[in-house]
Image (cartoon, rainbow, N blue to C red):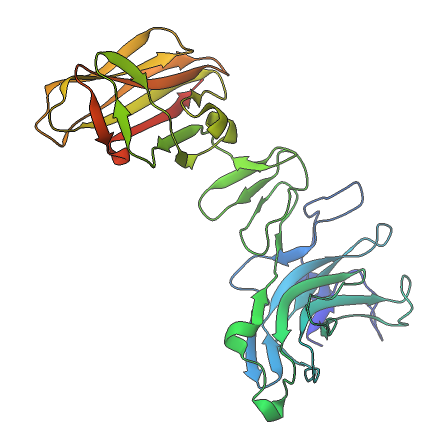
Length: 347
């Protein structure tokens, strides 16, 4: 028997010591008072799918947790040898999406009359707009398989290079860090951590956020602009190329870079000066107040630039704006000549 489950009576002798050793044990990630986050247990490439015939798929070894109904509980499962499953022929007219699943049968809670765990292919509805099948309780989706209309061994079978969609999601022990993989899912509880593939994230109750607090915005202009001579011009921005908090910039107040939290920030400004610029200055102002100088150039022969950074303490909701000054009016200044960023350094 290659698909095993602990805490499930299996004919004829019930749970064996081997079942208990192979299946994952312990309290897994909770999703409620009596619910467990089901999913695959990380380690290697568990329950990997590969086409091994025109209409056959093989699922590799691995371990998982399968959640039943609220009162039923969760079943730890181990697949100890690769299993080969056969996909039914496609419909003559419509395509469908099948799902490879781990299914637990427990006669105490369902009408199957069985007590076992196994891998299965559940057929999706055959329609003009195929979608994966809805799953019954105590079933964990691993892979989706696209089965085009008319697919069979006689027509060449399934194109396995494009048909398989990975639907494995991962779970871990309570308090553990959930591995990346599978579709994005919300956190199970405030304070849960996961590996995003590029760093640690923490679930706030509404969103995944970087575990290490970071706040930043970098803005750009997308159209050329003119400068009046003899006065400061506040620059407006057209978009962001990096932003951590949506509220740090928006098009309704396109000149403002807003501090989302209290702390020490670094302000960066960069300006390239066209030829003929006289007394070019860059400054920033806080909350519409007085300006603080960032850089200066007396005369530009063309393509000369200044870049500067400056620390400043801001309160949540404070905003800064970049201003530039020239003695002489300039027309058609390139949008790429101006850049600004606001980066949080710490409380």
